[in-house]
Image (cartoon, rainbow, N blue to C red; front, side, top):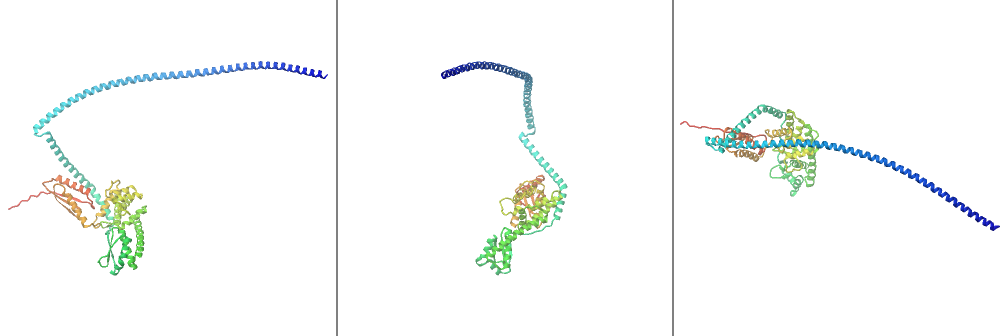
Length: 508
């Protein structure tokens, strides 16, 4: 029984397995058919999609081809138009070339004709020249020289006459007004004169004090010279000590120091050094104060502190015996007055007049003219260009660029040239007179020359048989120009050329 059940179970299992295998096989076949059908549908869909894309791309390509064909047609049309234009231009160029060739040929013919005419004209001129030489008895070169000389003399005569006419007219119209302006200017300004030199005399009460100043073995005087930089001369002159130095500030420091030492009575090297330092500070303060007071008195504002100090330093400097500060104040007032008379800015003129000589009082003294140095200082401390130019040009060191420059120059000359304003060393004065006379004697035809009126006038005597009247006038202009270019002098120099003919006979 049990075996039967086992066999029955095994048989049932085998039968079930066979049925399952049959069912699975049938299912697999059906799945294969369904898959194949689905694949066929997908293929058909893809073919349809590919055909649609192909059609779309074909249509797009055809459209692009049409557009390119249209562009090509447009370009062909434009090229045809350009070709037509080029053909037209080429035709015009060819016509112009033909016209130019015709003109060139015509010009060549005209040039040949001109050359022929020139040859004929040269022949005629030569014939005429030969006839003139035969008639006149002179060669062409001689006649040319005579003509040039006659024309030269005529030109000189006309030029001198023209110059005289112009000068006479200028004098008639300008001399009166110029004199009025200058006289009014001078009348409005007070003139003060201060005379200083490189030596200061210090007066003492007795020779005992002189010995105390010298000190034991000269220690005091050596200490004083070392501290002040001033040479102290002690000689046999009673009750006087000479202080010698080119720097007037140092001389003043030495003078005041000596005064304090003598007044105090304590004279020894340590005390000397202390007093000199104290006086030096006082002088520096006084210099600044003098500069400020001068600027306030003249109504000048906005000066740089260093320029104020230089203005104050002018108090201790002199030029040809004329105090530099007084001279600068005088020039400032003259310039302001003259600028007002001429309708210019009086404040700028006054400023330029005050600062025109600051190049004479710098702390260091480079080897440049004082006008140029003053201009550089003014530029350094931000003065206006016209003021700087007036400072630099008042001795013609540079070109004048504004109307202030000649005003400052003229006022500087007026201040220095007035009587009693300046004094010169006798040797320099005599040398200037001799230079004037020798300069005039260099010219041909001059017999004698005399410098008169302290060098303000030069009288030149010429030979009557050597120069005529026109040459005499020309000589005066030449001498004046040479003096102006080569010499330095205050004010102006009048040149008078004298030519006379004397006939002397004796009745016996």
